[in-house]
Image (tube, rainbow, N blue to C red; front, side, top):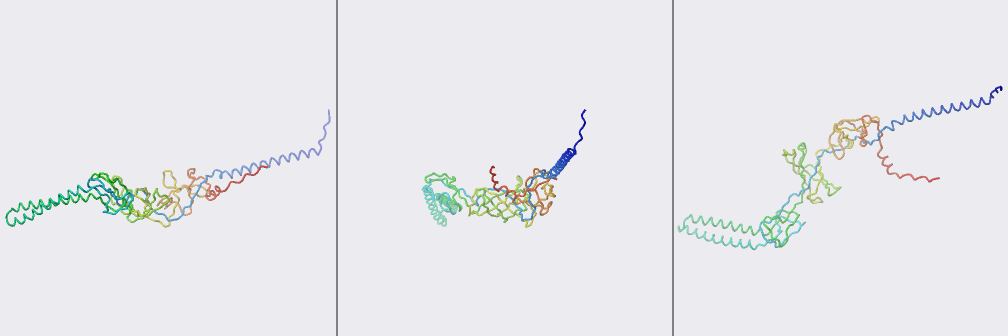
Length: 377
């Protein structure tokens, strides 16, 4: 049996040092684990926060207005028809030409009408002479007063026939019933024109009108003379100003609407038939508290927004006023300077933590050039 060797002091010190190092490493790992857990816990709320874009409730002017759509119509329009039949010998105007009331447009063949006038005139002269002689004879009691009366009636009838024939002759020259522009022409020289057939359309576009059918709840707000702003689809980016010309005091029982006619000058680029969007401003508030219309919640309930308070989203029900050009007036529920969510509303719930995005920083980051890739070593 071998005798045990005593342990050397050097080995004992080495083992103790190794154990101390192991314990220190374990303690360090524990501290790092706790620190990592604390850091993860601290970062957890930031990770759960919902990014949103906000706007401030602020004071600014806002207008109350009624908006609608309508087609522009001319002040006056006439369908010119032939009042007698005949062959068109000359067409005196073209499409797009401006004419004045009474100006000749077409000359029809007048020969038949002239012969009828000559025949009626001859009959009239004959009866006039007979009537003058009868007046002399009745004074001598050679004819009865009844015969003289009959001659007078025949004379008046002949005079009416002569006037009718003269009127028919005048119809062989077709004249413009109103002043305006020839919008269309459906006749050429040599065409045979039937009586009452349309041959021209004249439009007076010196003033254009737009007719709106407005719900009866607005009847107390709209008055003649109010300003009307117009935007035409055919002229993008252009704005035109007119005014309310007349307001019907009668509500249509079938539709529950009344007619409002707005007028505009036709001297510029506006043309008859253009589709237009109208806005009638009937009131103005110089210092109203407003928020963007995009901030309103679309959940079918009372008007409300998500306001940011202490880093969380809180539903704020509102009492609204006027709505104008993307802004809505807030009469109750917010104060100036309150932040309301305008983007990211769909992901929010009452009390949700939010992360407010800075729009300017976001746009700058989007427009900044991408950093160049580092060269491989």
